[in-house]
Length: 294
Image (cartoon, rainbow, N blue to C red):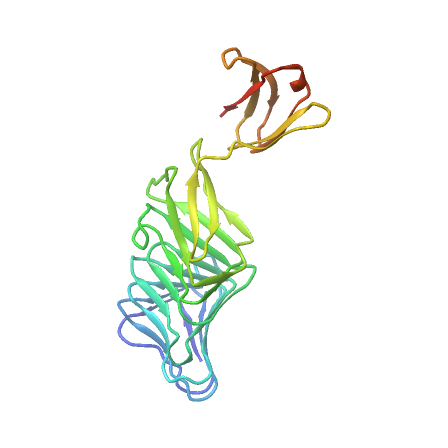
């Protein structure tokens, strides 16, 4: 067993598990506990008996972090039972390059009950990936250019999706309507993120998450203001207004598109409201508009 306290930089040579059951553990005896995979180095599991497990344990906020930089890879050196990278801490990818969990010789599997933090670059998971419902995928958006301005996951096969998707903005970047970000690429996928944490956008913009045939795509789009308009049997007109949260939403009506009168004020406006006009049948023409008060 090789146990690490403090900071461990993998720079000059591979780490190998060559005999029996070997465990690499990152613990928290000091204030910083970071392992770095840098400069094209390879974390190898050279197995003869048993298998290797690399585990991150986060019992301090700054501990249990694996920092992947440049073109590093995880590689099963001799085959045999499949080694495991077990993340219950933070796996952080920085710099605009690719870090790979190789599928060679049976691959190195990745189990994740912690955080995968993609600040830039690509995390290519070519072997098995097993996320739990507690797992988190964090993506930092600093612009619209993939790899250099935001990170992404790539799966050559199926991508199992679950857990929380958390997105943050950096460097003052504010995406405009029409911006899109392919944050997870795959040949196929199962499941979806069960929770999302998305940053606020300016008035008139909203996030849309698409699970497409080849990628999970984040888009910035204008909000869909009106849905489900219907005239009821009793003559009432109903529709659902959607939009960004505001201190108030003022519903107005007009018969000529020139003179508007207030019909209802919803305060605070929490993003969605069912509007009902009980007098709609009294008018030959009736138009509506919604004013948001920031």
